[in-house]
Image 1 (cartoon, rainbow, N blue to C red):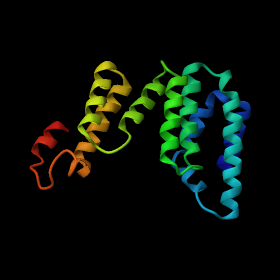
Image 2: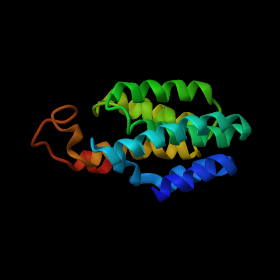
Image 3: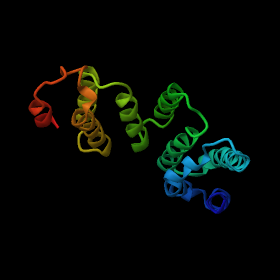
Image 4: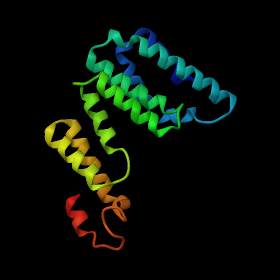
Length: 171
C-alpha cells in the first residue's frame, strides 16, 4: 500500500520519474496476483495508476516516455495471463516508439519469444549484427546464450544425449 501511495505521488507530481518508480516496484508487482479482497483493491489501484501514468507520457521526452511505457507493459502482464497479448503489445510498442532504445530492446524480446530453434538464433544473430555495439545487440546475443546454456535446445536443435561441447563452445 505504501509503494502504491509513493507511485501515485510520482505519477501526479514527478512524471519524469515514473519509469524509475516502476523499476523500483519490480518484483513486488507479483503481489498483485491472487483473488482476495485486498489484492483486488491493490490491483484496481495499480490499474488506475497505469491509466493516469499513460496520460502523462506526452509530457516526457520520447526516450523517457518509451522507457516508462515499456515498464507499464510489464505491469499490464499482472492483469493478463495471455502470452500472445504480451507479444502483441510489444509489437505495437516497438512500432510506436521506433528509434528508441526501449523499442530496440522490445524487438529483441519479440525475436526471443518461443522455443529455441536455429531460425530464432539466426534472427537474433542478424539483429545483433545490424545493431552492433548497442545494448539491444548485447541482449540478443545473451538470449541466444541463455537458450544454448540450458536444455532448451535438446530434442529441437540437438538430439538428446548428444555431446554438449559444440553447444558449450557456441555459448
